[in-house]
Image (cartoon, rainbow, N blue to C red; front, top):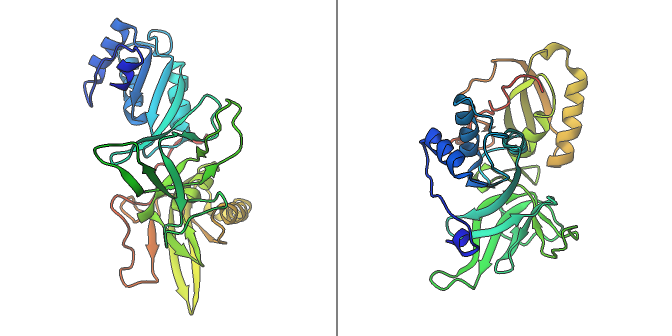
Length: 296
């Protein structure tokens, strides 16, 4: 309805039938796609299976995506495949759309109807220094279901309050890096596994990883097990990982290099041995095998 209000001709679509969608896109010269990144990737793959080049045989100039379990490379691949600009929007089922990305990037501009707050997931206190925390929104403009300090459960890197070159003055929501259920408190600091994943994925030759948390006497011990194609000859990388993870996670880890295949696909992403339910993690959180790719 919003697209129609600004004068767009809207072609509804749904999950599946990727080839049919590609045919419709080509026939109608569709210029904008609004979809989850994973489905937009399927459309590009379907087009190539049909011997079409998404960048030249289709007319797509803009892809609007909603954040899901993906990283920046997904958006880069989408932009390259379609020869189009990729913009992100942030929303949840309960709050509706809260923020959207402009052409300058650097975060998603919060809408004026939404009062966005970042809180400490552990105690709900407001984070004022721009650091990571849980997204909380208030929207009093909604009539049927006002939203008052709704905790979304999404953890963001924080708010960017610097002036944007586009001219907008609203704060920008930094990338969402996980969910509250993914967070473990280590040495008094909220540990977000996705921040560690972002560090590891930058290094060639590294594969899956697993986080192990132990308590020795009264002190927490953070161990990051990382699969490497050369585990016995990786001392420089090991020290680099220690320094980089300490920078983003604010906790100094111990790094244990293991051979590729040492971490089973079904293994939990986080093994917390400090508590009774050893190794239990939120649903669908498993050792990160998304890093299993050709060296980049």
